[in-house]
Amino acid sequence: MKKAYRVKTEADFQKVFHQGQSMANRQFVVYNLPKEGQAHFRVGISVGKKLGNAVARNAIKRKIRHCLIEFDQNDLIRDDLDFIVIARAPVRHMDYHEIRKSLLHVFNRAEILRSKE
Image (tube, rainbow, N blue to C red):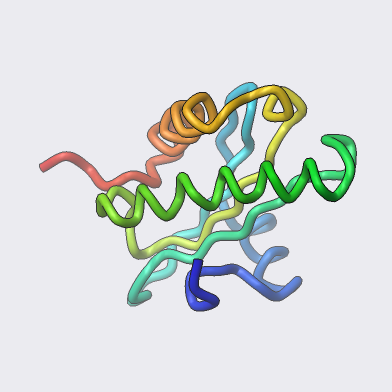
């Protein structure tokens, strides 16, 4: 994922947390903040230490990132958003397809996906 597509700074993370809206399912919490005039979405991924050691956490982040790249290639995600994806404990035991399905579900609920016109 390109650097331009990432929420990088602590200030940006805090802005999305405090000013954005949250939506959750059992596997993920998503905070989103609309930003007008933005060329493309930006995303931050958070996987806490309770989900395993560094190897396990990085594997989870890779799966989430892969889903986001696929969604972007299919032009599913709105461009005018900054959002943060936080993984919850059940993600530890999920494979890629289950993570993809769960992300689509929570993104749909959070209105991150483009509307079908």
